[in-house]
Length: 440
Image (cartoon, rainbow, N blue to C red):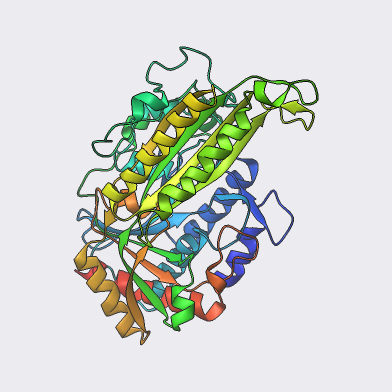
């Protein structure tokens, strides 16, 4: 079966009507897809193992099996109503690259390992790159095991539920560097992963610093630059750093017809002001690499004839410059404090994560450029404004990313698309990169 046919088949493991794909971490669809991918790896002669959170490793042992391995891979979980190429290209494309090397009769000196990460998307547990955070030691295992399923998180937290919870007023100060704590309200990940068959301590998930000598992730660009420029491949040099905020606004509910306008404490209107402040803060930097999105909003009681009493707003801020990113976060926190004071609302703001940007390893970047030249493909250096598992892998291994064009720069939508020739080009370049790195 070709990689294209496998992409088509993998898209069928979904809880959405085609062409949309929904495959949330640890769902039935995700578990069926994992089993299918693992069987493909076994059919290719790879040795498969899994860790306590479900990260899956498929290894082709080299002649010097004790030496640090060369890794490649991505994720297969998909946000609701998304497309079929995000993440899956790196998993199935990585597998096809390994199969191509085997067909060529290549004998790797270093082992080559395909890695399928657990829960790259934040859909279920409210934090992205869960598997790679644990692999790199970027997330406290005890905190991770207490992450609560998004569908079961309360709209607003009970008082005293988390001693680390901070109000907007307390957070209006310099961030002072990356924060990797995740305030939570109760245990859930532990139950879910164990029910899925992934048992053991999350403390054992972390990889040693010499486990990989290089890690390469093949991915669709999720932007329009390569397609517009007619260039075959993007060689990533930097990966933007994400920060995620959760803002909980509490006002006072009431009948939509009976409460007069001057007396209202409408939580949704407060949330709307904060959402507009998110846009203003990101735009004010003047840098094209600064972006911010108020992408999730849950309103209670969510009835047309009732004044909203509680709202949870989730905000995503990204930049390749962490200082500039943090200045946007501070501006949003200041706006939250103003809403707290001026609208007589209780506004509680939590920084879920504020990660450092990643810089790709120059040796891996050079290998990717050499691989592109060997495959006679045009290339350009570029940054990744989306973040990926490679962001966290770069903390424990020399890391690089290889981008292929996607139509219109569209991603996280059912019409996400990468042409067969672009997929083939990406696999060819990855094949050559793995050949070079595994021979080193």
